[in-house]
Length: 212
Image (cartoon, rainbow, N blue to C red; front, top):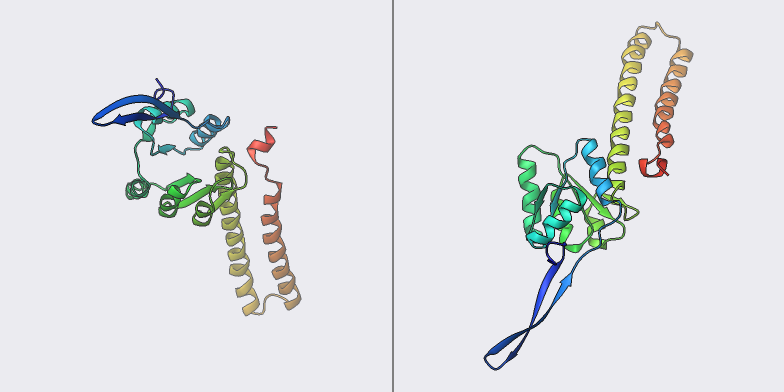
């Protein structure tokens, strides 16, 4: 019953001579974050498949996975095995992001394409990860992916326009068809347009904040 509820059970026994008697049990369980299911749902909407890796037994893992809406989970996974699972997923042609907050998650965070740590976790996890979420809110994972995609688009846009300016401006200047004053102004305008386009990212708001 405890395992079906997502708890890990440790049995207590008393030994007297050759006789061992069961004295009781301890049931350990983590409280799920209220936003965990919403986080998994948001990731699914943007095409990200969530896989849960845990050292807990299968019964506990299955209960937690069902509670947050994860269908693919791996139970009884040791820390070193987590990194191996990450490597297997990458070999299958997938881009893998690992989210963790404990010391045992460090090898997997390092093995992933992108490691994401919670600021509420251990220093080892934060030092190993490439991204640290400043709050222990799993919905920030989708926000981090969103701002990363937007930033990448801005970089590509800026490179495109810088290339166009140079493609047009350099030949005109080389053949003396462009006044030096106009050429200088065009170069300044190029820099201003690139910076202004990048500054548009300041208007971005996390979906978690926009929903409030």
